[in-house]
Image 1 (cartoon, rainbow, N blue to C red):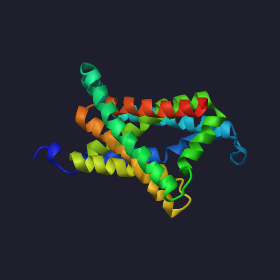
Image 2: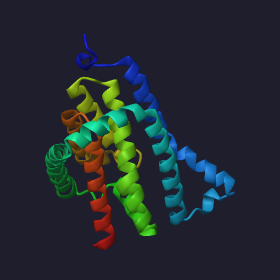
Image 3: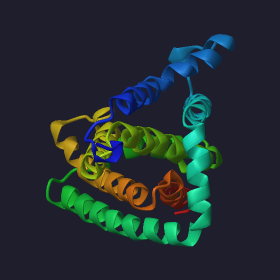
Image 4: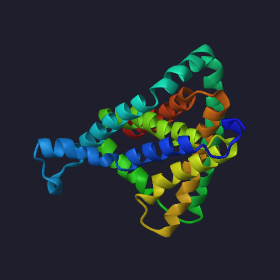
Length: 231
């Protein structure tokens, strides 16, 4: 049986777990400048926190690119040869995911009377601290990291289309909520975050190149950051 017909690739699963753990514990990379510069953790400003986050994200991205370098070279050729078609496919899935995200957010806000998601509040504080850097960090670097971890890593682990899309979206949405949730009702935010996860996963699955979901993810995040800065 070919790998694409399998539900799980155990070799891919090992790689997927490894990159997921790298992502999950990547904040510890911030200890490098903290120790080197003898920074006081109890007196860190919001600006310093953004700088530290950007530092760890850059290091993590470099590591992920090294891990997936062969696939990235191969999939760049696929993306480049059908760029407009791939972007068009990505946009279509993104618009569907965005619609589900907006509708579910509206229901959560008006029916369950919940405010802005805790993750969004944290991001807003970071944008206020260093707006221009957050355009780079949240708008460009973070999408690369998240697509390599949640799409590339999960696709290697779960070759089956539906298992890949479902698990990728569920874990992607959950991590945006669980790490900063303040009440059980916050779990509802997994739906809007997960809807985008489905869109990005379907984009990758359909076009066979991770660059499609990376581009759409970067566009989505960059627009949101710029709107937060300008509006």
